[in-house]
Image (cartoon, rainbow, N blue to C red; front, side, top):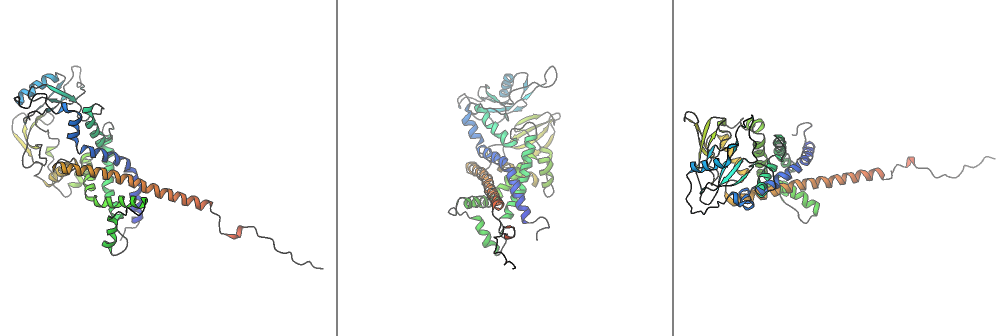
Length: 389
């Protein structure tokens, strides 16, 4: 039984107007997400110098510590490199994050890049860029797509907060939309079965309605995954972590772990990362050990696919969202899901526009239609009564 004041009509209004409010944002996020499913491939295609070493692949590799020293010398005194890339690949560049050093007059030096890509055979820096910066140069196209996808390229935390709120509304709307597909009559399953089908020959509007409804049903679980994982990325501390912590255990000591042997100056630890059977990604090692930077004491470990249930679920959600596991087939699937989500946004707006025009037209016709009430019409004069003589 529906709660008073919270029946089907209320859910219809929620789905209609929340969907309209989200449509533009989800369209942008879905289309950029479809492209980002192939982030590495597109990035290398646009800027191969950032990924393919100039030296021949059969040339000897430098010692990782020697490589770091050569790269640091080219960065200069304005920046510093706190990482050592231990797993060097022949013919492929090594990426080093760069942080600004303190300026003599106070504050920090301003750098127009925060990462460099270097030849592991010679130590020569082949490219510098902002990892999450905007720009139209080939090497900045993919970083720009990511910034738009993650925060709409808005300054500060505003974009992250806005898309986090949109993601939260999207999560709730997944349940609202699914509820509205449920039939009112019985038998339930035979009537609900029609909601999963698309009647392509029933006219453009009916096909649009069916694509919106059936597409949402067939992809419902995947769309919910992407919606809730977006909340995890954008509203982790304020919404996701408290909500998931109600029924899953977490280990939060490993927030913002670096991706190599790297000094975390703020926390005073070294993070040593390797690839292990506990990793989710087949090509990137995120299994890590934390070492105290002062004493060398063991401070903890990080196992992406093991440990507390909350961490494992969150790691898998993040990996699936970013199309990291399962290779090319899953990346293609994520790309298709992104295009489908964009289609659902467009068809939702089209359905609303069609109904809005129909309601407006019906309202206009009611206002100009002649009334059937004859009491206000002028009467035709009848014959005069006979005169008295």
